[in-house]
Each structure stands twice: as C-alpha cells, then as structure tokens.
Image (cartoon, rainbow, N blue to C red; front, side, top):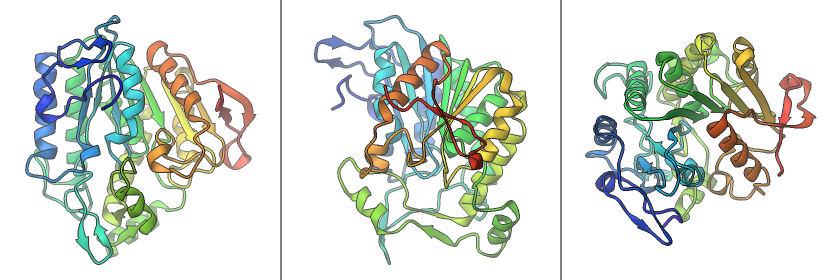
Length: 357
C-alpha cells in the first residue's frame, strides 16, 4: 500500500478511502470527467490482460489542503503508469488530482514464447496494424483518439491543468496541447520523443516497408527485471511498425510546436540514445520566449523519472532534485534551475539541470 492511500483503479475509482493519520477527500473526478475516465479504462482494459503495475490509476487530492487542480502524466511508449507512482503521491498531498492513463495498446501481459516471456504487440499502434480501435482505422487515429479523450477529460476538470509526458508520452503530450490550446495551464516534457538520434526518417521508412513486424528486442536482462517484484513493468521489445508509428506522431507534433502558447519546460538527458536532443532543442527554439530547457548529465537514463524500476543498478542521485523541480514547475511555473554546467557541443552546449539538492 502506498503511503498516501489506496490507489483508485478500475473497481475503486469512485470510492473514498481512509489512510493512516489523515483522510483523503472522497470525491472522484467531476461527473463528466469521471465518465470519460471510466470510458478510457474500459477501452484499454476490458477483455485484456494488463500487467498489474500498468493499470490506469487515479490519485485523489488530499482533503487536508486546498484543491489546486489536476495533473496528468503520459508514460513512455514501452513503459506504463508505474513510472509516475512516486511523484503522483507527492502531488496528491499538495492538492492535485493526478491521472495516470494507459497509452493505447500498452502493457499487455507477456506470454510464453520462444524467448520465455514474449511481449504481446498485437494491440499496439503500428503501421502494420490498421484496425483495432474506433474511431479510426490507422495508428494515427488511435493516438489522436487517446489525446482527444484526455483533453476532454481535462476540460471537464476544475482548477489548474498541468500535462506532463516522458519519451513517447512527451510526444503525445505535445500533440495534446497543440490540439487543445485553451485547456492546459503548463506543459512538462521529460525527454520527449520526436525522433530517434540513430534512425533516419528514410531508414525507418524503408525498414517499415520491408519488415514492419520485425521485433527489436532488449534481451533477457529486461525480462529478468520485469519478473522481479517492483521491477520494470511494460514491454521488453517493439516492432519496427510501432517505432515508426510513434516517430510519425512525434515528428508531426514537433513541426507544430510553435503554436503552443503556454509555459513549456523541456528536460532531457545528455547523450540520450533514445530521444534526439537535436529535435528537442529545435522544438524549444520555436517557443523559447515561453519555455526553458536543460539536460541531466551523461549517465542519467532516458527514463529519468523512475530509475528504481527502469534502471535498478544505477545510483538515482538526481531524482530528489528532479522531483523537487518538477513540483516547483507544476505548482508555480518555476523553470528548472541549472547546475551552472553545460552539456557537450554535441548536445548544443545546453545547460545541465540541477541534479543535487
């Protein structure tokens, strides 16, 4: 059980709960927002085997403080809501309702296959997989439907509305603000995936045409970590078609980023092998008058927000500063402070984020 209280998942979304030493307010989201949240859960979980740590979750704001609004986190493309458990508890204690939706087709239970616990890719948005969810018949429609559903839920919520996303979730969060410019108050992007630094657009398009079902596997270490209690939940492999689908969305979102008028904090990792820092820097430059950017130093992983499960062998020395600065931006719009150092020329000499308190 988490220290702040029971998590609201599927059957308990509308129930209040007691905690040791305090009582959380018993209201669920507003009626309209609650209906949309329930619809999201039904769409992504009914009749599907979802990894337990990946179920959509709602953390209600504490009744012991003034209600401030709502925060929504979009997880990384191969990960799941687990990435945000710790920071969600902190924000709920500060007076925010916190939503952790599940991105389309993610985190199905693995199955016994040639490599042991093989991943289930059949529901993922992919250029290979054209007919899964209404309203559309391709991967972009599925991602757009997710974005529009989350936007509408935020529109029906009270108070400030802050959106954050990591990696592929950062690309989707960028698109959500572009699609709903009058909805959100601030946008926090952790290593947003607009494209991969090692795969050219032409190269990925060719691979997508030739072998969209080819599986890019991360090996037995990922599966071993997933099998440990508290280890990384989510996928340990992706198809080329799924990578291409997310890249298509990210590239398009980055091209439209100049339309965003709310404050945006970009955060990345120096020498990130997954999210192209050049693309992130270019997006920042388009809205620099109302945005800030910094990178965590080399060695901090792409999945910086939750190294305990994503990178258990690393010393997560930067996490207290990341959490504190995330809360300061979410609650008051304060930009992430710099450590005073700069990244390498390869990463555009961008400022290094404060990484120790």
